[in-house]
Length: 241
Ligand code: GLN
Image 1 (tube, helix red, strand yellow):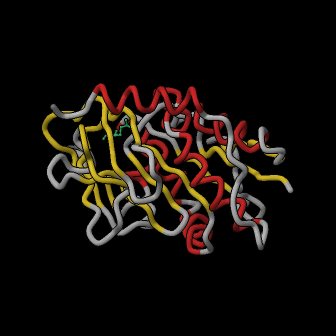
Image 2 (tube, helix red, strand yellow):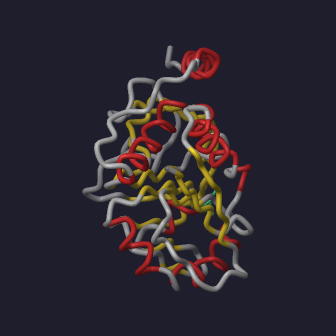
């Protein structure tokens, strides 16, 4: 069995090295003896075939890059929507998260999104920047990360990825962060999201392997002592006194 990971538009959407998340997924599969291959789809590629893809990753980008990439993404609207509805695993970070929704309204322009999630984003006055800690029903460990977004995302009836323990989250007000829908995990947490949160990485990988291999139950545990210590350190650092 081989798990194929597709990095969508790494040439435009890769703020803060979101790409490291792909390496983390690949390694955690390989360490368990599961073959993994990373494929990239850039602006220069013309056709998107998701028929044998197991995980799609869309990273974050500045407003400028999002404006450039949106038309290219919209050309694959049907492919991506069908993939998600067919339980394909998709991880979207920040700008990529916003583009899964109906639109991202900026002061001078509204960027049309893929409409895969029934959410929308509007640019706010100040940027929401800083460390963030979440509690999520998906995993036992807390999710730690870093957010930096001008957009406020309104998720309506969707299930959030987690409850904000420290930081801003989707819209600064509701106290929730991200969205989980079918096998989609969408979040504002940037950069080394998955290396910092190995349990979340395994949740994502498990969904992908289960879809590929019927009867598959769980991944073998890995020795994550160092990763867990780092995660707990951050959680304690930002614990509200
Ligand atoms: N440009 C978007 C915003 O500022 C997303 C930013 C990002 O991906 N960090 O809200």
